[in-house]
Image (cartoon, rainbow, N blue to C red; front, side):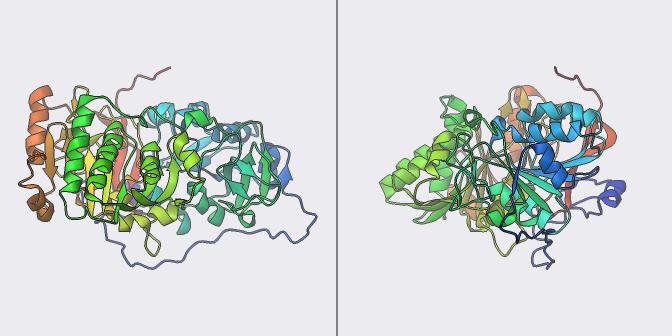
Length: 520
């Protein structure tokens, strides 16, 4: 069946998942549902200890079994040690047919590959995957389906009962013996635990895994003791230095600086740029540079940002220091500067649900004026791909991309015209992750395209000399003129993954690639 972005979704996938095809951003707006509740084992005896001696003991006490679903967060990013630690024990205990429901998986989890190959792990639910896991899924090694969801989409799936987490393991930088968890104060600080809030509220069993047991009460807590069944102390849960990624650094690249300047000029010449505006940006070099140049113009014009929301890095924390933003609403920290900043006034922790869940009574993304995003590919329909590389390999994550893109009044996607020798602006993206109806402006190093749906923004920018306007088709043609029209990736028939829209409908499918060279 063909969906609203023109993608054909196989009937067998609709039957297997019980899902509908994507029918537009607001298809399920206002549709009521009953929120799922967890199984709760009360603790009334004051002599009860929640401390367990090992991950194995925690699994045993939680009733681990074949076919269970395990929850994890990714706040340690490339420094995460918890997922591998738990899954090794699950494998050694002989459990099979496991579903992992993680907020994201990355190169830190390459060690899971043998567990995919031997059937320990059969399904993966995540905002995306990188590294060897993405390669394995693309090569058809995962026996079940990979389901890619946005950060808001994960909350929706858990709250509606579409996904029931049997046991969630929460890596907690500090925790007391009763389960009060915080993202700071230990030796493996990650700043916030926003992605685990939903696990604490809805998982049937919750295990706090910490390498820093502190005196009771560890308050104010990110995850409260009333949500936690067991506490397990281990040697190390994460490597803080690996939280920061190469992307989270200022850039000297001329192309990125050019895009940053175009982006800044778009923002300051559109109607929402006024005192108290709300903003979200990413951690790519162009995004960071744009935030810096935007700050200079804000000072000149006496304009302050009301709040910034989402993942935080040094650039946004610096704006808070300078008094240019009222509040930071933090769901993830991309560098150690942001981790430290969490401890300060006006830098607030929020849950991923408050940030972006489409099935609550209104999330922060709905109050955004601007969001600055990146993409692997953008097509002439303004659809974006942030998950599947031009070679057909799953290599990225939705994150909050579809959530913020739909919520913001002005969604700006920054993308170089070429990714290496491959056109990033194309006729049709390899895989649709964010629909074109959510994207207002595309900024490249060769010019800026405004979605024809937004004639108001086109009018605002038409006479701005510092914004070189082009149509999206013109940008595509320039890219093809440089490198030629790329040949489409050759996929097989088998569907190995689905791209969920925020509301749980199917945006696109990912098929097994026909030819694959497995990397060491």
